[in-house]
Amino acid sequence: TRENTGRAQRERPTPKPEVNFGDVFPASVKKLGDGHFPDNKSKHVWLVAYVDQQGSAGSVNFAKELLSEISLKLEQSMKVGGVICGGDKNKRTCARVKQKGRGPLFISVVVDGQEVFFEGKPWPSKPKPKELYDFAVQNMPSDVVKDVNRASDVVPKLLGGGRRRAVVLLTDKFDVSSMYLGLAYKHSKDAGRKLSFGVSRGSSLEIGRCMKAKKYPLVVMIEKDEGAEHGFKIVARAEGGKGAERLSRSRLEDWIERQYANAKESCKSKSKKRRKR
Image 1 (cartoon, rainbow, N blue to C red):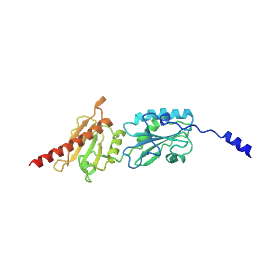
Image 2: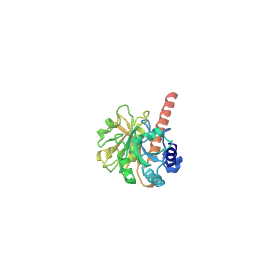
Image 3: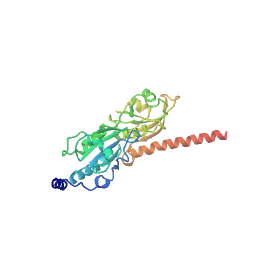
């Protein structure tokens, strides 16, 4: 009846107004959604948080605090992005989490366009920062870094298939940092440079000797050289230290760019000399 219809309309909950991205996510989180979402062309590994704007104020505030903490811990390793769901926002992207059930917060890691979701206890159980950090690190792509613990490993594993240069991390540890994995993943997407990445773990004596390691960690850039003893030569070194001298992501990014800039200048200089002759 008309009376029952009117009563049902009055009892139906009024949807909350649309919210701004900054109301839900901290400044360290990048905006994702129907207009932009990581795919198989993305140069970074992504941690993605889906937050339902129709959730309670408490759940939205919890998500914001949690992501503020986790994004700082992961800033050296991957990008952290957020998607606002609910209402008319990002319907296509938010369809990814509909099959996961109801909840104000879902977390995933996206690598090469493939998405893996964090499978914690259902809400209202709240994920802890360490749980999410461990989940993110465990889903980093490890195949982008090759193990080289003997000098004879270097050329076949790192400098084959038309690759001329490689970066090698020498460490006294047995785990590879998520920062180094993220760096290697980014450069694996650059088909033009063909720069490969390797690691020598646990203070390998043989690699340490041939790459002249005096202390750890050490990062070297090597180049194919068929006339050299092991088929490669070292073109640059970056040693770890404390404070500003530690091997941070930004420091290694700058160091790699400098090596390519130096190589270009060297090629130009050689070309000019040949023209003068």
